[in-house]
Image (cartoon, rainbow, N blue to C red; front, side, top):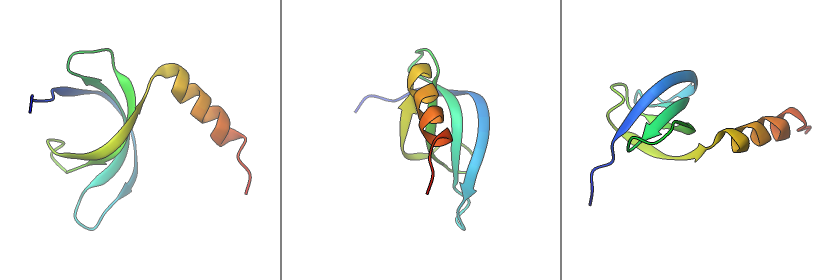
Length: 73
């Protein structure tokens, strides 16, 4: 399996932290040298291991903000 290269370009915020020290974070991440995308996933404390997550381009992120802003329970 080929190695996945990543760079956390900007840390935006931590959503939660587990008892094991992993944190669910929203960051701007460049994957394999590509343009950075909004990325939501779990990271270990050293940020060298990660869980499954999602990436969104700028347009998708803006749409998600619009949806969340209009959400009512």
